[in-house]
Length: 360
Image (cartoon, rainbow, N blue to C red; front, top):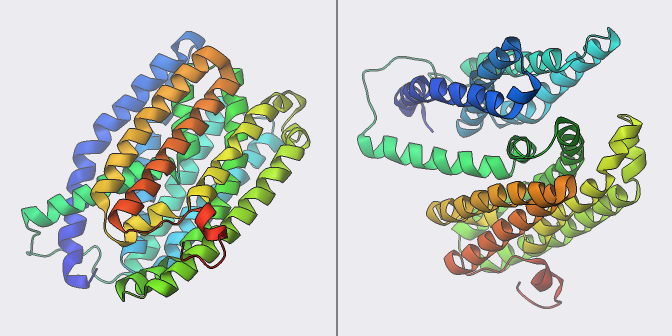
């Protein structure tokens, strides 16, 4: 943070975007041709896929810059609220005019990303002085290397946390039919809502936990972790039970055919339960600065996710993909937990949190 570091950091971001966005957009179009070529994706859809990349990147970077430079409220509002609400409003408008198709739905998604990105950057320019100013000062190569390493780690963890429905849908598109992919996308959204609720609860202790660990106050840190794990487990279990019981009625809101995703949704409710079982390992590792451990575990987890989705899809279709996803997330959470025990010498998981009179 700090105003003097804004110009070099923002200059590095602009250079990185210039060299990475074009090839990533090309990969998105290539994926569209590979996964949808047999069903005849239109040129318009491929163009929208190409524009989705810079629009989503602009929003993601804007939210991260806002958070990193202290505009936490702006980060939360635009990262979690504005874009989904805009997207839902646009879809409702299209549905009301009977013009909701794959092309118009994708266009609504791109527009929601673009408008949200414009909004967050306008607010960032007002709330973060000097963020867009020019300066003769430049970052050292060591600083830029550290920034990019941190960005890589954050990007990979985002695939598992903030964007896991999109990550799984992208992979599943290679093995599932369009009909099953639509069912999976809806089931993932319900699981995502529950997982985000439990994740938000865990993140709420972040500032306090960071302060206690930084001050060496181990007893208070244990108390915070124990309380977080217990409440998170209770919320995750209650939410999973509701989704398990009411899977069919909830899915039928989107149409009777979507009830076919009920078993997949029930399997995916294991995701927040897995996170609750192993505790806030990712948060603890982030606080203690164990970026290399996070990177190693996340790379292994992403490889497991790819294998689980592809193999599960070939062998078991929609339910197979769901099982593969659960197995990969279990491996990732277990790996993070093991890293916490090694790097921070803490055991923030449910069995120890439930043990009376134990530090964890």
